[in-house]
Image 1 (cartoon, helix red, strand yellow):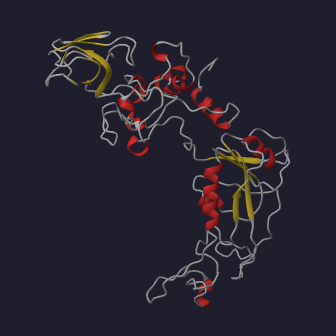
Image 2 (cartoon, one colour; image 1 turned 30 degrees about the vertical axis):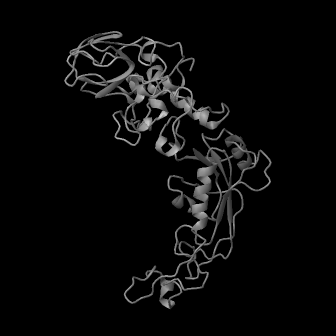
Image 3 (cartoon, one colour; image 1 turned 90 degrees about the horizontal axis):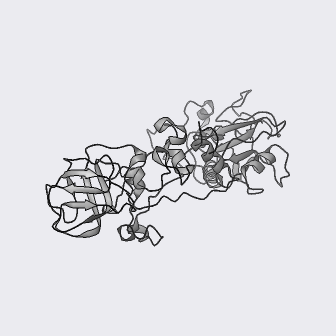
Length: 397
């Protein structure tokens, strides 16, 4: 996300102190309130003496994606000017702002007095009650920047523009782009717990574990309790530089790879590829036969063949698999166990202790499809995702 701010003066030049990762740059531009006077006699007023007696407003406009977060930050900043306080004036309490020369005149600046609407104790942020709010006229990052720069009509002045990517070049507009909350819009996540929201009825999800889908982004795998513990690997990041970057990266294979791509560059379509990584690797929809040591895959299921990480000597467990069973041999869709199964099934989930954790994009599919969010191709969000996933890719994308 980005903040686009023209160079202008004063008012509430410490807004960035409240908005944490947001740094606002002010300078020349739209006229601001007259400079405040300092009751302590200073020629150049500085905090905490912003006593101009006026209320100033700062208005943002632009992206609808960033609207909600910016509104919360605006409310936080505005709220800093809403309330004074009533401090306990018992003996021995440390004086508030005791280094302030004006404090020597009495309690008016040492303690907040009851029933008086005096300046707040938040002396470095919003001493003089600046009001900050988010406009919703001409929604979109580009229109917001255009309103900011005066190239698009706006019903009320715009002091900064919200965006999800750097503002486009607008002739003659000396704005400053500031990035913040760059992880504010998750591109891929599934953290719902059915114990809270109910079982899934969504096609493709309802057939996995009876629709009781746990938070796969936290490492839930079929058969795990929905409330944990989870045997999978939690999703902590998606890289655009792993596997050498470009078209082989996890990010590219999620968002950009063709459905027809094969091999290491094949599209990632199943949550298991990101979270079913071991050391306890689960293979779903395995066919077992009571009295037989052979287990097999159909070749058309979530895992078309047994992963290469499964090898002879590894322990294996699952429904109808006797304790102490190991892998005797494995090849493609076939597996020979050291002991015969005691239950017949075509949908068994077998767990193999492979003794290691494989690469994030190489996990075994579990039949739970990844459904990427639909993004307006004209949105800054889509542009940002595309630039991220397509980095270092030449042609196509």
